[in-house]
Length: 324
Ligand code: UDP
Ligand code: MG
Image 1 (tube, rainbow, N blue to C red):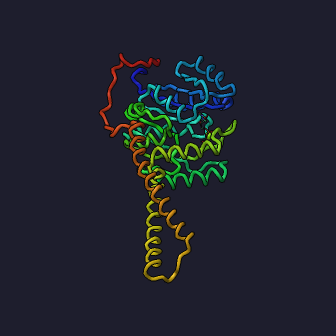
Image 2: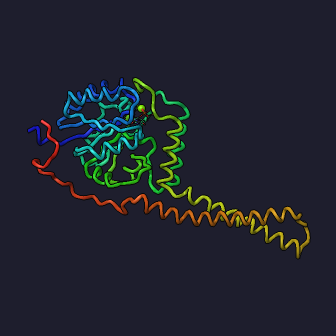
Image 3: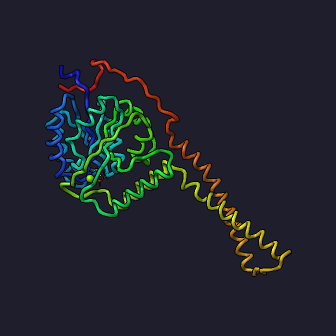
């Protein structure tokens, strides 16, 4: 019976993709219909400035399985994907880019892993055709750095192209932090994860909306929200400076009153004293930073732990989706 099929939600953030949207819909429909699942597509119009909204409305009107969330302005992909995950009703959802860079023909592979019990299936990009050197180098250094300084391991080239199970969706929906990198949060949640390699297609229409600076901004945000290292940096620096100038100071005093060998000038002594004091100020900053770190942790209000609950089975009569 059709109504007993599991429901798959496809989540697609859309920002200025008027040409890609119809194409995307036609292509994904074929892939989804070939599967033995009920499905829905949730498009999030992230304040597009072109005619994406009309294209989306057209599709949603024709096809009851397609829904649209229309943002009042551009909030960024991270928030758009969050909105999609918040509102999807599926037993699992798959996040996809509207520009067809994520190969939709790989969806069955993701589902196969999911059916085998994996709760988060992550697409890992092998190559990105037509990606500039700066972007490549940037993402390389970003992953190197964040893996070095943050507490969790982030797989290089892991993308937003991923399937997440309902148990993970429910936990994700409880997270309330605003400045977010969706994929890092999903990683933070844990659960059984597996990776699938894919080769990103070239963008067919339009231009990538993520400019260099937007990516830099995103990278900074995720470093700040997953690592305390930048906060502690001032403190470390202070300790080093105080230590070194302290040794130098002792040496100067010994020289001045006992050995009388070098004969440091007045300005040299002044410089060492100032350095020493700067070191102490930095240490104080580091201490304050530790308190801020605690406040930061409390404010983001992440749950202290995540429990893997048994999957709820919702009785058919209570299911809100009604797909025939
Ligand atoms: N996107 C969005 N809001 C934005 C920027 C992008 O919803 O502010 C969407 C965009 O429509 C696409 C996906 O996010 O579906 C990936 O964007 P893009 O192709 O520009 O990024 P890249 O492929 O370079 O990661
Ligand atoms: Mg793209």
